Every structure is written in structure tokens, then in C-alpha cells.
Length: 209
Image (spheres, rainbow, N blue to C red):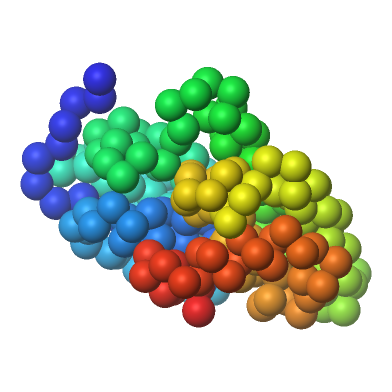
């Protein structure tokens, strides 16, 4: 059992970052009090000495615990909070279903997001221009969403895995938010359109609307 923190949590995040939105939407769903500390990626605030002391990887989100310890990586943060606040449950009790949820989280966090994030977009733009960077993001988004679509079509119901929200939806819905930002349509992905509609009907996902 994880140690229960006392006092206020501080979330260092950029509300336009899909990885930050995973945690922000989760906190809303669980009705957990948090102080949001904005980190404006576009202005380079993630490279300040203060932020690098929290996360040397220079990435958001960072969850700062009341005792000053910091957690990085959205999946680790959500798994930690879920252990402390298991109601309403976002991980199925059945082991195979829970593994499917974690697999879908990783499809977004480990496969899709790393090749489309701001750091990569800027590197491609510097090497080949803005149009090439946009095409890069759209191509890899379509490839990544195709894999997520297949998983949601196989194991989903109203949501990504089954008919109730799970941790997977807190990864999939922000990925779809990002897709819209970059002009990637969801017509090829009927299962993901269904998941998106179910998520956006919940108050927790209001930041994605």
C-alpha cells in the first residue's frame, strides 16, 4: 500500500500538453484537490533551473507531493494516485482486463506520443521545415491511432476497455484532442469516435472540449 500524502498536491503541467491533460482529467474525475503550477512549454519554462530540479528530463507533468518529493511520467503518476484513491475504480479487478488497460495506456504513452511531441516536432521543423513537421505529426498520429483503434474495437464498449471509464481513457481522449489540434480526422476510427463521445460526456474531460 502506498503511503498516503497529507496536504496539498502540486501539479506542474502545461494544460495544452496531452500528457498533462491525462493527469488533469484524472484529478477532476477523482475530485482530488490539487494546485496547478503552469509550465509553459512554448516559452521554455520546462528548462528553468527550478523545473529541472524537479524533473531533469525537462518534461511535464510532474506531481509534487506535500513532502516535496516529485513523481514524473503520467502513467506512474496515475498508478500511484489510483493506489491511494481506488474509488471509483479505473483499473479492472480482473488481471487480464487490467493488463489490457495498461497495454492501451502504453500504446499512447510509449508508441504514439514520443514521436509526435513538441520536442520531436521542433527537431523535424528545424531539419526540414514547418510543413514537413506537420506532415510528420499527422502521419505518425494516423499510424498510432490505427493501433489504438484496433485495441478499442476488440476490447472496448462505450469506453476504451469495456463500458466504464478506465485509466486507458485518460490516455486515449487527450490523444484524440491532439489529433484534432493537428487536423487529423477521426473518420477512419469509429471505435475511437465512440470513445471520444463517451469521454466528452463526462465532466472530468471538460478540458478537452
